[in-house]
Amino acid sequence: MDGPGKPAHPFNSMNLRIPPRLASFLTLSLLAVIGTLLVLKATPEGLSLSDDSIAYIAGARSMLAGNGYREAWLASNGPVTHFPPGFSSVLAFFGLLGLDPLRGTRFVNAILFGLNTGLLGILVWRMTPSLTAGLVIAGLFITNSEMLKVHAAAMSEPLFIFLSLLSFWMFDLYFERPPSSVGRGISGEWWWLVACGIFAGMAYLTRYAGLALAATFIAAIVVLRTSWRKRFTSIGIFLAGFLPWGVVWALRNRLVAGNATNRTFAWHPITADNLVIGRREASEFLVPVEAWRREIFKQPGIIEILIVIILSAVLVWTLFKAWKYFSKPRQASALERGGKESREVISFTTGLHIFAYLASIVASMTMFDAATKFRLRILSPVYVGLLILLVALGIWMRKRQRPLVIAATVLLFAFSVYKQSITIADWSRSGLGYASFQWYDSQAMAFLREEPKDVMIYTNEPAAVYLYVGRGARVLPYRYDAVTAQERPGFEQSVAEMQSEITSGRAVLAIFDGGDNVAVDIDELVDGLYLAHKSQGDSIYTARP
Image 1 (tube, rainbow, N blue to C red):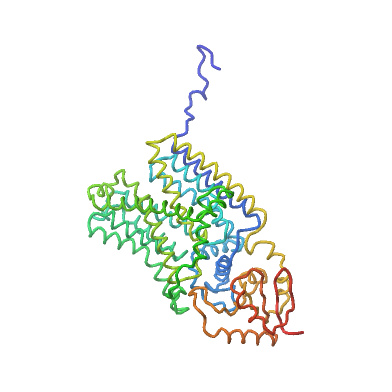
Image 2 (cartoon, rainbow, N blue to C red):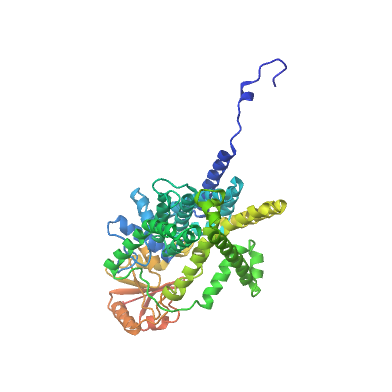
Protein backbone atom coordinates (compact mmCIF):
# COMPACT_ATOMS: atom_id res chain seq x y z
CA MET A 1 0.00 0.00 0.00
CA ASP A 2 1.46 3.36 -1.01
CA GLY A 3 2.03 5.73 1.88
CA PRO A 4 1.59 9.51 1.93
CA GLY A 5 4.10 11.30 -0.22
CA LYS A 6 5.29 8.10 -1.91
CA PRO A 7 5.01 7.71 -5.66
CA ALA A 8 2.14 5.54 -6.80
CA HIS A 9 2.92 1.96 -7.66
CA PRO A 10 3.22 1.68 -11.45
CA PHE A 11 0.46 -0.94 -11.68
CA ASN A 12 -1.98 1.34 -9.86
CA SER A 13 -1.73 3.90 -12.63
CA MET A 14 -2.42 1.42 -15.39
CA ASN A 15 -5.91 1.23 -16.80
CA LEU A 16 -6.66 -2.53 -16.66
CA ARG A 17 -10.34 -2.18 -17.43
CA ILE A 18 -11.44 -4.35 -20.38
CA PRO A 19 -13.89 -2.60 -22.73
CA PRO A 20 -17.39 -4.12 -22.46
CA ARG A 21 -17.50 -5.08 -26.14
CA LEU A 22 -14.17 -6.93 -25.91
CA ALA A 23 -15.23 -8.63 -22.67
CA SER A 24 -18.49 -9.75 -24.30
CA PHE A 25 -16.64 -11.04 -27.36
CA LEU A 26 -14.22 -13.02 -25.19
CA THR A 27 -17.11 -14.43 -23.16
CA LEU A 28 -18.97 -15.39 -26.33
CA SER A 29 -15.84 -17.09 -27.65
CA LEU A 30 -15.54 -19.01 -24.38
CA LEU A 31 -19.17 -20.14 -24.65
CA ALA A 32 -18.49 -21.33 -28.21
CA VAL A 33 -15.52 -23.39 -26.99
CA ILE A 34 -17.65 -24.82 -24.18
CA GLY A 35 -20.29 -25.82 -26.73
CA THR A 36 -17.70 -27.69 -28.79
CA LEU A 37 -16.44 -29.51 -25.70
CA LEU A 38 -19.97 -30.44 -24.63
CA VAL A 39 -20.57 -32.36 -27.87
CA LEU A 40 -17.25 -34.18 -27.47
CA LYS A 41 -18.10 -34.94 -23.84
CA ALA A 42 -21.52 -36.35 -24.75
CA THR A 43 -20.19 -38.55 -27.57
CA PRO A 44 -17.11 -40.49 -26.39
CA GLU A 45 -18.12 -43.43 -28.61
CA GLY A 46 -18.89 -41.18 -31.57
CA LEU A 47 -22.01 -39.41 -32.78
CA SER A 48 -25.41 -41.07 -32.91
CA LEU A 49 -25.73 -42.94 -36.23
CA SER A 50 -28.83 -43.62 -38.30
CA ASP A 51 -29.63 -44.65 -41.87
CA ASP A 52 -29.22 -41.09 -43.11
CA SER A 53 -25.96 -40.74 -41.17
CA ILE A 54 -24.45 -43.71 -42.99
CA ALA A 55 -25.68 -42.29 -46.29
CA TYR A 56 -23.75 -39.06 -45.66
CA ILE A 57 -20.65 -40.89 -44.45
CA ALA A 58 -20.67 -43.38 -47.32
CA GLY A 59 -21.23 -40.56 -49.80
CA ALA A 60 -18.19 -38.72 -48.41
CA ARG A 61 -16.07 -41.87 -48.65
CA SER A 62 -17.19 -42.31 -52.25
CA MET A 63 -16.06 -38.76 -53.02
CA LEU A 64 -12.68 -39.40 -51.39
CA ALA A 65 -12.28 -42.55 -53.45
CA GLY A 66 -12.75 -40.51 -56.61
CA ASN A 67 -16.07 -42.15 -57.51
CA GLY A 68 -18.25 -39.08 -57.07
CA TYR A 69 -21.27 -38.78 -54.77
CA ARG A 70 -22.64 -42.33 -54.85
CA GLU A 71 -24.72 -44.74 -52.71
CA ALA A 72 -21.72 -46.69 -51.47
CA TRP A 73 -23.76 -48.23 -48.65
CA LEU A 74 -25.91 -50.05 -51.21
CA ALA A 75 -24.86 -52.79 -53.60
CA SER A 76 -26.24 -50.76 -56.51
CA ASN A 77 -23.80 -47.91 -55.72
CA GLY A 78 -25.87 -45.52 -57.85
CA PRO A 79 -25.53 -41.72 -57.91
CA VAL A 80 -27.02 -40.02 -54.83
CA THR A 81 -29.90 -37.64 -55.52
CA HIS A 82 -32.12 -38.10 -52.46
CA PHE A 83 -29.58 -36.46 -50.13
CA PRO A 84 -28.01 -33.16 -51.23
CA PRO A 85 -24.20 -33.17 -51.16
CA GLY A 86 -23.40 -30.35 -48.73
CA PHE A 87 -22.72 -32.32 -45.54
CA SER A 88 -20.93 -35.16 -47.32
CA SER A 89 -18.74 -32.59 -49.10
CA VAL A 90 -17.66 -31.09 -45.79
CA LEU A 91 -16.85 -34.56 -44.43
CA ALA A 92 -14.90 -35.33 -47.61
CA PHE A 93 -12.91 -32.09 -47.18
CA PHE A 94 -11.80 -33.16 -43.72
CA GLY A 95 -11.13 -36.59 -45.16
CA LEU A 96 -8.51 -34.99 -47.42
CA LEU A 97 -6.72 -34.05 -44.20
CA GLY A 98 -6.61 -37.71 -43.20
CA LEU A 99 -9.75 -37.89 -41.05
CA ASP A 100 -12.14 -40.68 -42.07
CA PRO A 101 -15.71 -39.31 -42.41
CA LEU A 102 -16.99 -41.69 -39.71
CA ARG A 103 -14.67 -40.06 -37.17
CA GLY A 104 -14.66 -36.69 -38.84
CA THR A 105 -18.39 -36.12 -38.44
CA ARG A 106 -17.98 -35.99 -34.65
CA PHE A 107 -15.44 -33.19 -34.82
CA VAL A 108 -17.30 -31.35 -37.58
CA ASN A 109 -20.57 -31.24 -35.63
CA ALA A 110 -18.79 -30.38 -32.38
CA ILE A 111 -17.12 -27.41 -34.07
CA LEU A 112 -20.46 -26.43 -35.64
CA PHE A 113 -22.09 -26.38 -32.18
CA GLY A 114 -19.49 -23.84 -31.12
CA LEU A 115 -19.78 -21.81 -34.32
CA ASN A 116 -23.58 -21.76 -34.14
CA THR A 117 -23.33 -20.57 -30.55
CA GLY A 118 -21.12 -17.67 -31.60
CA LEU A 119 -23.25 -16.78 -34.62
CA LEU A 120 -26.42 -16.63 -32.55
CA GLY A 121 -24.70 -14.31 -30.11
CA ILE A 122 -23.61 -12.01 -32.95
CA LEU A 123 -27.07 -11.99 -34.54
CA VAL A 124 -28.81 -11.10 -31.29
CA TRP A 125 -26.23 -8.41 -30.54
CA ARG A 126 -27.16 -6.84 -33.85
CA MET A 127 -30.87 -7.42 -33.38
CA THR A 128 -31.46 -5.91 -29.95
CA PRO A 129 -28.77 -4.24 -29.71
CA SER A 130 -27.53 -5.63 -26.40
CA LEU A 131 -24.25 -7.32 -25.55
CA THR A 132 -25.95 -9.08 -22.65
CA ALA A 133 -28.70 -10.43 -24.91
CA GLY A 134 -26.08 -11.93 -27.21
CA LEU A 135 -24.53 -13.79 -24.30
CA VAL A 136 -27.96 -14.91 -23.07
CA ILE A 137 -28.90 -16.50 -26.42
CA ALA A 138 -25.49 -18.19 -26.59
CA GLY A 139 -25.93 -19.56 -23.08
CA LEU A 140 -29.46 -20.76 -23.80
CA PHE A 141 -28.26 -22.48 -26.97
CA ILE A 142 -25.42 -24.48 -25.43
CA THR A 143 -27.51 -25.44 -22.39
CA ASN A 144 -30.49 -26.55 -24.47
CA SER A 145 -30.53 -30.35 -24.52
CA GLU A 146 -32.44 -30.52 -27.83
CA MET A 147 -29.77 -28.43 -29.56
CA LEU A 148 -27.06 -30.66 -28.09
CA LYS A 149 -28.85 -33.78 -29.36
CA VAL A 150 -29.09 -32.32 -32.85
CA HIS A 151 -25.34 -31.66 -32.92
CA ALA A 152 -24.54 -35.02 -31.31
CA ALA A 153 -26.06 -36.93 -34.23
CA ALA A 154 -24.22 -37.50 -37.52
CA MET A 155 -26.75 -35.54 -39.55
CA SER A 156 -26.79 -32.44 -41.75
CA GLU A 157 -28.87 -30.15 -39.50
CA PRO A 158 -25.92 -28.49 -37.67
CA LEU A 159 -24.40 -27.46 -41.00
CA PHE A 160 -27.82 -26.33 -42.26
CA ILE A 161 -28.32 -24.17 -39.15
CA PHE A 162 -24.82 -22.71 -39.53
CA LEU A 163 -25.35 -21.71 -43.16
CA SER A 164 -28.83 -20.37 -42.39
CA LEU A 165 -27.49 -18.13 -39.61
CA LEU A 166 -24.76 -16.85 -41.92
CA SER A 167 -27.38 -15.97 -44.53
CA PHE A 168 -29.38 -14.04 -41.93
CA TRP A 169 -26.24 -12.13 -40.94
CA MET A 170 -25.48 -11.20 -44.55
CA PHE A 171 -29.09 -10.10 -45.07
CA ASP A 172 -28.90 -7.83 -42.04
CA LEU A 173 -25.59 -6.34 -43.23
CA TYR A 174 -27.15 -5.57 -46.60
CA PHE A 175 -29.94 -3.52 -45.04
CA GLU A 176 -27.60 -1.85 -42.59
CA ARG A 177 -25.09 -0.52 -45.10
CA PRO A 178 -25.72 2.84 -46.82
CA PRO A 179 -25.93 3.01 -50.62
CA SER A 180 -22.63 2.86 -52.49
CA SER A 181 -21.74 4.14 -55.92
CA VAL A 182 -22.06 0.58 -57.21
CA GLY A 183 -25.34 -0.19 -55.53
CA ARG A 184 -26.94 3.27 -55.74
CA GLY A 185 -30.71 2.99 -56.02
CA ILE A 186 -30.74 -0.51 -54.54
CA SER A 187 -29.73 0.45 -51.00
CA GLY A 188 -26.93 -1.22 -49.15
CA GLU A 189 -23.79 -2.84 -50.49
CA TRP A 190 -25.11 -5.30 -53.06
CA TRP A 191 -22.43 -7.91 -52.41
CA TRP A 192 -23.88 -8.59 -48.95
CA LEU A 193 -27.11 -9.66 -50.66
CA VAL A 194 -25.14 -11.85 -53.08
CA ALA A 195 -23.40 -13.42 -50.06
CA CYS A 196 -26.82 -14.00 -48.47
CA GLY A 197 -27.94 -15.81 -51.62
CA ILE A 198 -24.74 -17.87 -51.72
CA PHE A 199 -25.12 -19.07 -48.13
CA ALA A 200 -28.82 -19.79 -48.68
CA GLY A 201 -27.86 -21.78 -51.80
CA MET A 202 -25.28 -23.72 -49.81
CA ALA A 203 -27.95 -24.41 -47.17
CA TYR A 204 -30.17 -25.79 -49.96
CA LEU A 205 -27.35 -28.15 -50.96
CA THR A 206 -27.24 -29.28 -47.35
CA ARG A 207 -30.98 -29.77 -46.96
CA TYR A 208 -33.64 -29.24 -49.59
CA ALA A 209 -35.56 -27.26 -46.96
CA GLY A 210 -33.17 -24.45 -47.87
CA LEU A 211 -35.84 -23.42 -50.36
CA ALA A 212 -37.67 -21.97 -47.36
CA LEU A 213 -34.73 -19.60 -46.85
CA ALA A 214 -35.07 -18.32 -50.39
CA ALA A 215 -38.80 -17.77 -49.90
CA THR A 216 -38.10 -15.98 -46.61
CA PHE A 217 -35.62 -13.50 -48.03
CA ILE A 218 -37.69 -12.80 -51.14
CA ALA A 219 -40.74 -12.08 -48.98
CA ALA A 220 -38.65 -9.90 -46.65
CA ILE A 221 -37.29 -7.91 -49.61
CA VAL A 222 -40.82 -7.27 -50.86
CA VAL A 223 -41.84 -5.99 -47.43
CA LEU A 224 -38.73 -3.95 -46.64
CA ARG A 225 -38.00 -2.27 -49.98
CA THR A 226 -39.92 0.93 -50.74
CA SER A 227 -40.52 0.61 -54.49
CA TRP A 228 -41.14 -2.21 -56.93
CA ARG A 229 -38.01 -1.30 -58.90
CA LYS A 230 -35.91 -1.74 -55.79
CA ARG A 231 -37.78 -4.93 -54.90
CA PHE A 232 -37.22 -6.59 -58.27
CA THR A 233 -33.59 -5.44 -58.41
CA SER A 234 -32.84 -6.77 -54.92
CA ILE A 235 -34.60 -10.05 -55.61
CA GLY A 236 -32.57 -10.44 -58.80
CA ILE A 237 -29.31 -9.84 -56.92
CA PHE A 238 -30.28 -12.39 -54.26
CA LEU A 239 -31.23 -15.00 -56.85
CA ALA A 240 -27.91 -14.44 -58.64
CA GLY A 241 -26.24 -15.81 -55.52
CA PHE A 242 -28.81 -18.51 -54.78
CA LEU A 243 -29.88 -20.08 -58.07
CA PRO A 244 -26.56 -21.41 -59.43
CA TRP A 245 -26.27 -23.90 -56.57
CA GLY A 246 -29.70 -25.43 -57.06
CA VAL A 247 -29.61 -25.31 -60.86
CA VAL A 248 -26.23 -27.04 -61.16
CA TRP A 249 -27.28 -29.74 -58.67
CA ALA A 250 -30.59 -30.35 -60.47
CA LEU A 251 -28.82 -30.60 -63.85
CA ARG A 252 -26.32 -33.07 -62.42
CA ASN A 253 -29.12 -35.23 -61.05
CA ARG A 254 -31.00 -35.14 -64.34
CA LEU A 255 -27.91 -36.22 -66.24
CA VAL A 256 -26.81 -39.06 -63.94
CA ALA A 257 -30.14 -40.30 -62.56
CA GLY A 258 -32.97 -38.85 -64.64
CA ASN A 259 -34.56 -36.97 -61.71
CA ALA A 260 -33.92 -33.73 -59.84
CA THR A 261 -34.23 -34.79 -56.18
CA ASN A 262 -35.47 -38.42 -56.18
CA ARG A 263 -38.90 -37.22 -55.14
CA THR A 264 -42.16 -37.52 -57.04
CA PHE A 265 -45.50 -35.86 -56.46
CA ALA A 266 -47.97 -38.10 -54.62
CA TRP A 267 -50.68 -37.11 -52.16
CA HIS A 268 -50.20 -38.69 -48.73
CA PRO A 269 -51.73 -36.73 -45.80
CA ILE A 270 -49.81 -36.48 -42.55
CA THR A 271 -50.61 -39.53 -40.45
CA ALA A 272 -51.81 -39.58 -36.87
CA ASP A 273 -48.61 -41.41 -35.87
CA ASN A 274 -46.53 -38.60 -37.34
CA LEU A 275 -48.52 -36.01 -35.38
CA VAL A 276 -47.92 -37.97 -32.18
CA ILE A 277 -44.19 -37.92 -32.92
CA GLY A 278 -44.32 -34.16 -33.41
CA ARG A 279 -46.33 -33.70 -30.22
CA ARG A 280 -43.75 -35.64 -28.25
CA GLU A 281 -40.81 -33.75 -29.74
CA ALA A 282 -42.48 -30.40 -29.00
CA SER A 283 -43.19 -31.45 -25.42
CA GLU A 284 -39.52 -32.28 -24.87
CA PHE A 285 -38.50 -28.84 -26.11
CA LEU A 286 -41.15 -26.94 -24.14
CA VAL A 287 -41.12 -28.80 -20.79
CA PRO A 288 -37.71 -28.85 -19.05
CA VAL A 289 -38.30 -31.60 -16.45
CA GLU A 290 -38.97 -35.10 -17.77
CA ALA A 291 -41.31 -36.07 -14.93
CA TRP A 292 -43.42 -32.98 -15.61
CA ARG A 293 -43.31 -33.61 -19.35
CA ARG A 294 -44.65 -37.16 -18.99
CA GLU A 295 -47.57 -35.99 -16.86
CA ILE A 296 -48.42 -33.11 -19.19
CA PHE A 297 -48.06 -35.36 -22.23
CA LYS A 298 -50.71 -37.68 -20.81
CA GLN A 299 -53.24 -34.86 -20.67
CA PRO A 300 -54.91 -34.44 -24.09
CA GLY A 301 -54.77 -31.01 -25.63
CA ILE A 302 -52.24 -29.26 -23.38
CA ILE A 303 -49.23 -29.58 -25.70
CA GLU A 304 -51.39 -28.72 -28.69
CA ILE A 305 -52.65 -25.57 -26.94
CA LEU A 306 -49.09 -24.50 -26.11
CA ILE A 307 -48.02 -25.02 -29.72
CA VAL A 308 -50.99 -23.03 -31.04
CA ILE A 309 -50.41 -20.17 -28.57
CA ILE A 310 -46.70 -19.88 -29.40
CA LEU A 311 -47.09 -20.10 -33.17
CA SER A 312 -50.10 -17.77 -33.15
CA ALA A 313 -48.18 -15.17 -31.16
CA VAL A 314 -45.22 -15.39 -33.57
CA LEU A 315 -47.54 -15.18 -36.58
CA VAL A 316 -49.44 -12.14 -35.28
CA TRP A 317 -46.18 -10.37 -34.39
CA THR A 318 -44.64 -11.15 -37.80
CA LEU A 319 -47.72 -9.95 -39.69
CA PHE A 320 -47.80 -6.79 -37.58
CA LYS A 321 -44.14 -6.09 -38.40
CA ALA A 322 -44.72 -6.82 -42.08
CA TRP A 323 -47.68 -4.42 -42.22
CA LYS A 324 -45.75 -1.76 -40.31
CA TYR A 325 -42.78 -1.88 -42.71
CA PHE A 326 -44.86 -2.24 -45.87
CA SER A 327 -47.43 0.44 -45.09
CA LYS A 328 -45.02 3.10 -43.81
CA PRO A 329 -42.39 3.73 -46.49
CA ARG A 330 -40.79 6.57 -44.51
CA GLN A 331 -40.11 4.20 -41.66
CA ALA A 332 -38.88 1.58 -44.11
CA SER A 333 -36.62 4.12 -45.78
CA ALA A 334 -34.86 4.54 -42.44
CA LEU A 335 -33.87 0.92 -42.82
CA GLU A 336 -32.32 1.70 -46.18
CA ARG A 337 -30.25 4.54 -44.65
CA GLY A 338 -28.97 2.30 -41.87
CA GLY A 339 -31.23 3.76 -39.21
CA LYS A 340 -31.51 2.11 -35.83
CA GLU A 341 -34.56 0.10 -36.86
CA SER A 342 -32.36 -1.91 -39.26
CA ARG A 343 -31.56 -4.23 -36.39
CA GLU A 344 -35.16 -5.45 -36.46
CA VAL A 345 -34.50 -7.09 -39.81
CA ILE A 346 -33.17 -10.19 -38.03
CA SER A 347 -36.16 -10.75 -35.76
CA PHE A 348 -38.60 -10.06 -38.58
CA THR A 349 -36.93 -12.46 -41.03
CA THR A 350 -36.66 -15.04 -38.26
CA GLY A 351 -40.43 -14.93 -37.79
CA LEU A 352 -40.94 -15.22 -41.56
CA HIS A 353 -38.56 -18.18 -41.76
CA ILE A 354 -40.32 -20.15 -39.03
CA PHE A 355 -43.52 -20.27 -41.08
CA ALA A 356 -41.80 -20.66 -44.46
CA TYR A 357 -39.87 -23.61 -43.06
CA LEU A 358 -42.92 -25.22 -41.44
CA ALA A 359 -44.83 -24.81 -44.70
CA SER A 360 -42.01 -26.48 -46.62
CA ILE A 361 -41.82 -29.56 -44.40
CA VAL A 362 -45.61 -29.96 -44.32
CA ALA A 363 -45.64 -29.74 -48.12
CA SER A 364 -42.87 -32.34 -48.28
CA MET A 365 -44.70 -34.71 -45.94
CA THR A 366 -48.01 -34.43 -47.78
CA MET A 367 -46.85 -34.31 -51.40
CA PHE A 368 -43.24 -35.44 -51.87
CA ASP A 369 -41.82 -37.59 -49.06
CA ALA A 370 -44.09 -39.52 -46.71
CA ALA A 371 -41.02 -40.87 -44.89
CA THR A 372 -40.30 -37.43 -43.37
CA LYS A 373 -41.42 -37.26 -39.74
CA PHE A 374 -41.69 -34.50 -37.16
CA ARG A 375 -38.44 -35.62 -35.53
CA LEU A 376 -36.13 -33.36 -33.56
CA ARG A 377 -33.73 -32.94 -36.47
CA ILE A 378 -36.57 -31.74 -38.71
CA LEU A 379 -37.93 -29.30 -36.11
CA SER A 380 -34.54 -27.98 -34.92
CA PRO A 381 -34.43 -24.88 -37.23
CA VAL A 382 -37.82 -23.85 -35.80
CA TYR A 383 -36.45 -24.21 -32.28
CA VAL A 384 -33.48 -21.99 -33.12
CA GLY A 385 -35.85 -19.32 -34.44
CA LEU A 386 -38.01 -19.53 -31.31
CA LEU A 387 -34.95 -19.06 -29.08
CA ILE A 388 -34.04 -15.90 -31.02
CA LEU A 389 -37.55 -14.50 -30.68
CA LEU A 390 -37.68 -15.47 -26.99
CA VAL A 391 -34.63 -13.31 -26.29
CA ALA A 392 -36.13 -10.50 -28.39
CA LEU A 393 -39.27 -10.72 -26.23
CA GLY A 394 -37.14 -10.60 -23.09
CA ILE A 395 -35.40 -7.41 -24.25
CA TRP A 396 -38.76 -5.81 -25.03
CA MET A 397 -40.18 -6.76 -21.63
CA ARG A 398 -37.04 -5.70 -19.77
CA LYS A 399 -37.96 -2.06 -20.27
CA ARG A 400 -41.26 -2.69 -18.48
CA GLN A 401 -40.68 -5.62 -16.11
CA ARG A 402 -36.93 -5.84 -15.54
CA PRO A 403 -37.04 -7.87 -12.26
CA LEU A 404 -39.47 -10.35 -13.83
CA VAL A 405 -37.28 -10.80 -16.91
CA ILE A 406 -34.16 -11.35 -14.81
CA ALA A 407 -35.93 -13.90 -12.61
CA ALA A 408 -37.35 -15.73 -15.62
CA THR A 409 -33.91 -15.80 -17.29
CA VAL A 410 -32.24 -17.24 -14.20
CA LEU A 411 -34.98 -19.85 -13.82
CA LEU A 412 -34.76 -20.80 -17.49
CA PHE A 413 -30.99 -21.23 -17.26
CA ALA A 414 -31.36 -23.36 -14.12
CA PHE A 415 -33.81 -25.73 -15.81
CA SER A 416 -31.71 -25.85 -18.99
CA VAL A 417 -28.49 -26.69 -17.15
CA TYR A 418 -30.31 -29.36 -15.13
CA LYS A 419 -31.75 -31.03 -18.22
CA GLN A 420 -28.50 -30.67 -20.15
CA SER A 421 -26.52 -32.41 -17.40
CA ILE A 422 -28.90 -35.39 -17.56
CA THR A 423 -28.67 -35.52 -21.35
CA ILE A 424 -24.86 -35.51 -21.35
CA ALA A 425 -24.75 -38.22 -18.68
CA ASP A 426 -27.19 -40.43 -20.63
CA TRP A 427 -25.61 -39.96 -24.04
CA SER A 428 -22.02 -40.41 -22.86
CA ARG A 429 -22.65 -43.89 -21.41
CA SER A 430 -22.54 -45.61 -24.81
CA GLY A 431 -22.94 -45.01 -28.51
CA LEU A 432 -26.38 -44.28 -29.91
CA GLY A 433 -28.11 -45.68 -32.95
CA TYR A 434 -25.78 -47.77 -35.09
CA ALA A 435 -22.88 -46.68 -32.85
CA SER A 436 -24.29 -48.65 -29.89
CA PHE A 437 -22.92 -51.94 -28.58
CA GLN A 438 -26.07 -53.64 -29.87
CA TRP A 439 -24.49 -53.36 -33.31
CA TYR A 440 -20.83 -53.26 -32.37
CA ASP A 441 -21.06 -56.67 -30.62
CA SER A 442 -23.64 -58.17 -32.99
CA GLN A 443 -23.05 -61.88 -33.62
CA ALA A 444 -25.09 -61.60 -36.80
CA MET A 445 -22.66 -58.99 -38.14
CA ALA A 446 -19.76 -61.29 -37.28
CA PHE A 447 -21.52 -64.09 -39.22
CA LEU A 448 -21.97 -61.81 -42.26
CA ARG A 449 -18.31 -60.78 -42.22
CA GLU A 450 -17.41 -64.42 -42.87
CA GLU A 451 -19.55 -64.62 -45.99
CA PRO A 452 -17.66 -64.60 -49.32
CA LYS A 453 -17.45 -61.22 -51.04
CA ASP A 454 -19.37 -62.48 -54.05
CA VAL A 455 -22.38 -63.45 -51.92
CA MET A 456 -24.96 -60.66 -51.92
CA ILE A 457 -26.58 -59.56 -48.63
CA TYR A 458 -30.29 -58.71 -48.55
CA THR A 459 -31.24 -56.92 -45.34
CA ASN A 460 -33.63 -54.53 -43.63
CA GLU A 461 -30.60 -52.63 -42.29
CA PRO A 462 -28.26 -51.93 -45.23
CA ALA A 463 -26.69 -48.94 -43.47
CA ALA A 464 -25.67 -51.04 -40.46
CA VAL A 465 -24.32 -53.79 -42.72
CA TYR A 466 -22.21 -51.23 -44.60
CA LEU A 467 -20.86 -49.87 -41.34
CA TYR A 468 -19.96 -53.18 -39.67
CA VAL A 469 -19.43 -55.56 -42.58
CA GLY A 470 -17.78 -53.04 -44.87
CA ARG A 471 -19.75 -53.72 -48.04
CA GLY A 472 -22.85 -52.53 -49.80
CA ALA A 473 -26.07 -54.49 -49.34
CA ARG A 474 -29.41 -54.78 -51.10
CA VAL A 475 -32.61 -53.52 -49.54
CA LEU A 476 -35.44 -55.99 -49.03
CA PRO A 477 -38.42 -56.09 -51.34
CA TYR A 478 -40.95 -53.80 -49.67
CA ARG A 479 -44.65 -53.93 -50.35
CA TYR A 480 -45.03 -50.17 -49.79
CA ASP A 481 -42.80 -47.31 -50.88
CA ALA A 482 -41.76 -45.30 -47.81
CA VAL A 483 -41.49 -42.07 -49.81
CA THR A 484 -44.80 -42.17 -51.70
CA ALA A 485 -46.72 -44.34 -49.16
CA GLN A 486 -48.09 -46.27 -52.13
CA GLU A 487 -47.95 -49.98 -52.93
CA ARG A 488 -45.04 -51.06 -55.09
CA PRO A 489 -45.85 -53.07 -58.22
CA GLY A 490 -44.24 -56.50 -58.58
CA PHE A 491 -43.65 -57.16 -54.88
CA GLU A 492 -44.29 -60.92 -55.14
CA GLN A 493 -41.97 -61.24 -58.15
CA SER A 494 -39.19 -59.39 -56.29
CA VAL A 495 -39.57 -61.75 -53.33
CA ALA A 496 -39.37 -64.79 -55.60
CA GLU A 497 -36.22 -63.47 -57.28
CA MET A 498 -34.57 -62.80 -53.92
CA GLN A 499 -35.42 -66.25 -52.59
CA SER A 500 -34.09 -67.86 -55.78
CA GLU A 501 -30.73 -66.13 -55.27
CA ILE A 502 -30.63 -67.25 -51.63
CA THR A 503 -31.49 -70.91 -52.26
CA SER A 504 -28.87 -71.05 -55.04
CA GLY A 505 -26.17 -69.76 -52.67
CA ARG A 506 -25.67 -66.43 -54.41
CA ALA A 507 -27.17 -64.36 -51.58
CA VAL A 508 -28.15 -64.41 -47.91
CA LEU A 509 -30.99 -62.68 -46.06
CA ALA A 510 -30.28 -60.84 -42.79
CA ILE A 511 -33.26 -59.71 -40.71
CA PHE A 512 -32.24 -57.52 -37.76
CA ASP A 513 -34.45 -57.11 -34.74
CA GLY A 514 -36.07 -53.68 -34.60
CA GLY A 515 -35.53 -52.95 -38.28
CA ASP A 516 -38.19 -51.08 -40.24
CA ASN A 517 -40.80 -52.23 -42.72
CA VAL A 518 -40.55 -56.00 -42.29
CA ALA A 519 -43.10 -56.94 -39.64
CA VAL A 520 -46.02 -57.21 -42.06
CA ASP A 521 -44.19 -59.15 -44.78
CA ILE A 522 -41.66 -61.15 -42.76
CA ASP A 523 -43.46 -64.49 -43.17
CA GLU A 524 -43.60 -64.12 -46.94
CA LEU A 525 -39.95 -63.02 -47.16
CA VAL A 526 -38.54 -66.02 -45.25
CA ASP A 527 -41.02 -68.65 -46.43
CA GLY A 528 -39.11 -71.84 -47.35
CA LEU A 529 -35.66 -70.40 -46.51
CA TYR A 530 -33.08 -72.12 -44.30
CA LEU A 531 -32.38 -70.40 -40.94
CA ALA A 532 -28.58 -70.57 -40.62
CA HIS A 533 -28.06 -68.20 -37.70
CA LYS A 534 -30.14 -66.67 -34.92
CA SER A 535 -28.88 -64.47 -32.08
CA GLN A 536 -30.01 -61.40 -30.14
CA GLY A 537 -33.27 -61.41 -32.09
CA ASP A 538 -31.43 -61.26 -35.45
CA SER A 539 -31.86 -63.97 -38.10
CA ILE A 540 -29.81 -64.93 -41.16
CA TYR A 541 -31.15 -67.18 -43.91
CA THR A 542 -28.87 -68.94 -46.39
CA ALA A 543 -28.87 -71.84 -48.82
CA ARG A 544 -29.21 -75.21 -47.15
CA PRO A 545 -25.85 -76.79 -46.21
